[in-house]
Image 1 (tube, helix red, strand yellow):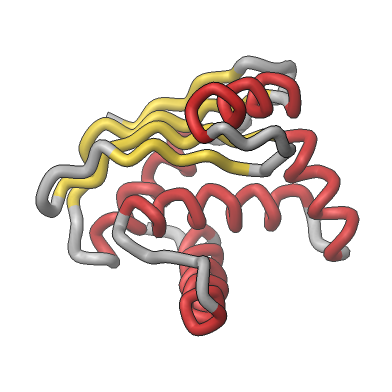
Image 2 (cartoon, helix red, strand yellow):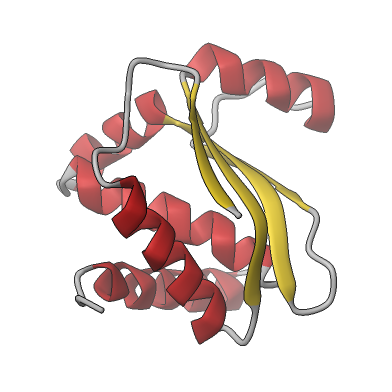
Length: 139
């Protein structure tokens, strides 16, 4: 089950469309969707999670907790809307586009993609763009 939770004033307006897109991303990577929770929050909420669980005292746009078993993607994906908004401004893209990128990024981590080395970062960026384009394809 794909669920969206809001710990801030931000709300997705098309949750069905987003859930269908998440499902298609999973399938496109050879997985099925298990229990996937997107938790939209603010910087302070995500900073506390970062400190508590990862011992990092820094702001971030996303933290992903992976519960994937076999070929069924499951996990909790925490997204700071404040970071996403700032990144959208920094990179000159729409909030919608940046939000899709970050959501796809979390799912790609659950599918096993990494982004610590330069070659992995390039692959991750390519995959993010591929998944963003899928959002705009009507099914």
